[in-house]
Image 1: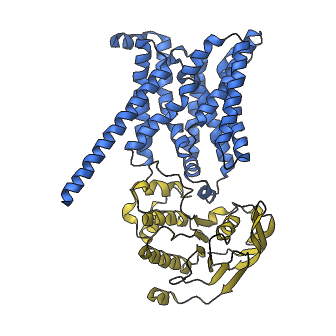
Image 2: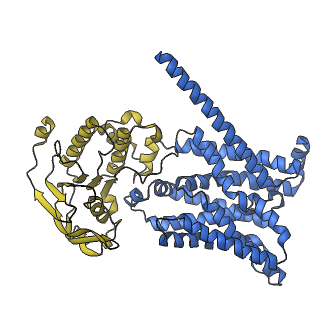
Length: 291
Length: 227
C-alpha cells in the first residue's frame, strides 16, 4: 500500500499537484494560524469558510444557468466572497465592540443560509460533501496558480510587515506607539486571511480549515520556548500531518481534509500527554531533592 | 532633546450618560513629572485613555506641542505601560528579546535593548519566555518596551499594582532616574503615599469630578535616593 502511494505520487499529475498543494498549505496554514491564535480569533477561519461557500455555490448556480464568469471556476468567486465575509466581520466587530463574537455568528449564519439556497437551486447538493470535508486529490491548475499567488502575497506581507503584524496581534494599544495604523493593519490581515481560507477550502473543506490552521499551532505552543520555535514546531507538525494525511486519504479512500486533521489531533494529544508526564516527573524530582 | 508640551483645556468626558471627567485643565512642560492620584472611579485611567487618544475627546481639547490631539501623529514619542498588562495576549510563547525587537522601531538596535534591560536590572532574562516570568519581572519588561524608542513622554498606569514593596521602591527609583534624563513622566497611582517619588506636579482626582493640581519643587535626586 505504502509503496503504491509513493510510485503513484510521481506517476500521476493529480497526485503530484495534491502533494505540492499540501506541502505549501502545510506552511501557510500554521503561519497565518499562529497570528489568528494570538489575536484570539480561532473561529474566524470557520466563519470565512462558510461565507466563501456562498461564492462557490453562486458560481455553480450561475454555471447551471448558463452564465460563465471567472473561468467557470468556483474557487475565484469563493475567494471574492471570503474577502467580503472578512470585511463584513470587521464592520460588525466595530458596532459590537464588547461582543465581537456576535459578528462571526451573523456572518456564518448568512453564509450557511445563502449557500444552502444556491446549492439547492444549482441542483448541486452532491458537491457539498467535497466542499465541507475537502478533497485535495481533485485540485486543478487554477487552484495551483491561486496557491502560488497566495504564497507570494502572504510571504511578502510577512517579510515586509511581519514585525507590525506581530506587534498589533499581541497588543493593539502599544502598536499605536510604533506609529502603526491599527485599523488599516487589521483590514489587511483580514483580507489576507480571507484569501488563505478560500484557497484552503478545496483541500481542507469548510469544516476543517480552522483545524488545519489552529491545531498544529496549539501543539507547537506546548513545546515552543519562543515565537520562532513555536512557529517552527507548528510548521513541522503541520507538514507531518499533511504528508501522512495524504497517504491515508489515498490509501483508505477517505476525505483528505479529514485525514490531515485527524493526524493533527493525534499529534496534539501525544504532545500534550508527553508534556504532562515530563512535567510530573520534574515536579516529583524537585520534591525528592527538597526532602 | 525633549520639547513636548502637554496642554489640557476644559476636558470633559462621559461614558454614555455617566460623566467621569468635568472641565479639567492643566499644563506640563518638557521634563515635568506628574503624579495622578485618586480613588477607584475618580477618572484616572479615563484621563490617560483621553491623553493616549484611545478615548475620543468630544468636550475640551488636548494639545501636544500646540497640535490638537485629533491630528496628532507622532505617537512614537510616547511610551505607555498599562494597568495590569491585561491588554497583552499571553500564553503564546515569545521571549523577552523577541518581544522587544518587535516593538523596536529600529530592528537592528540590539545594544539599545541590552542597555535598557540592564538599566532595569533584568538583563539575565533576555532569552526567557515571558510566560515564565514573575509579576515584577514582567512589569519591568513592559517598562523596557515603553522606553525602547526613546520616548519624550512616559505614561505609567498604576504600574506597581501587581508587584511587592521592594520591587515598587526599585521601580520608583528607576522612574526618578528616567525623569532626571529629561523624560516627561505621567504616573497614575492609587497609593496615598508618594514617598520615593520625585514628582514636580500632583493631580488629585475625586469621585465628584473635582480635582486639584499642584506644583512643587523636585528634590535633588541624591536626596530622593536617601528617602
